[in-house]
Image 1 (tube, rainbow, N blue to C red):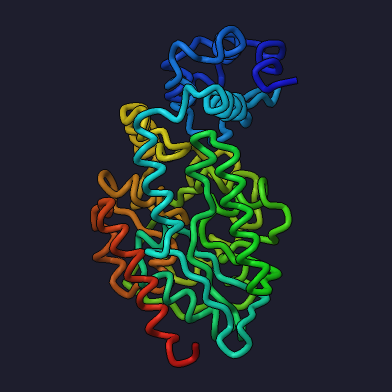
Image 2 (cartoon, rainbow, N blue to C red):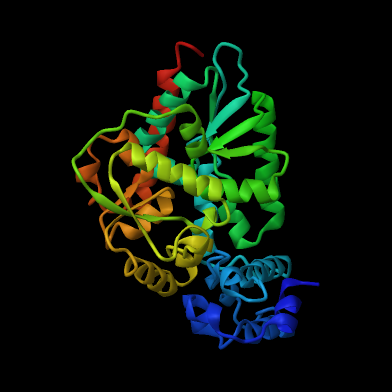
Length: 365
């Protein structure tokens, strides 16, 4: 049974998910209404509709029947691609950026220089690399001290291609990533990005992935820069929903910095999307902005998160940091008011990161 059929038959039209979702409140009175529309014509008349869902799984948390509109919308996107209706015009930008992240401009395989192998590999992801090369380098230097022989792999997990609904291209990216990891001898990828963990766990079961923050707690603590007393509201990314071990590890890491954590009502497994998920900003900037505004209004203090995309989403409206800023950035008290990086700067940062890594380990290589 398809996700749409499950929703059409199982939705009790209670409205709980609609109340908490900018996408659903705009397009339907209940998920059943949306599912029936999909079953009728696969959204061919308005193909943008399923692309306005952030795929955050929040609806499943709210639903008494544990139905998931996001899975239906991803299914719809895949159908639209198979039928030649999608990708949509705005997705040209997504594909261009995805191709760039997979190109030699950013991609890098750096195994243990001594053995040309690495059974553990740091996988920072493209979002953190675009946010701060310095944080990636600091985290990798620390890991090298604690995990001798650890390698690093710069590449995208392919989530933008998955969000578009192009299953074949997404599988190709995963196959390439698995081949690279195998060539390095990697038995485990240590991921900084919760979105990478979610996608690789779901779609690449042959790759063992683990959160950087779990590893840090296991091998730490880290001596962190102290910038006086401060309180931060912690935002759990929607991609980390259901991963209590990551929630706990991140809070332990934040404790090292000496700041006070303010917990949100909607946190951990009930957290809400920052507005950037699922590629929504490309199709409906307004829904994305409304989702971000809704979340910002729930933040009592300055925000700290462990998703670089979330940090960048909040930066225009709230002083914001990535958790690794508290660990490795001695200027975090000033940098929390920095605006989000524009796309060209993100590319420059990724190129800079690769260049610095190559130069740093040139002698060893």
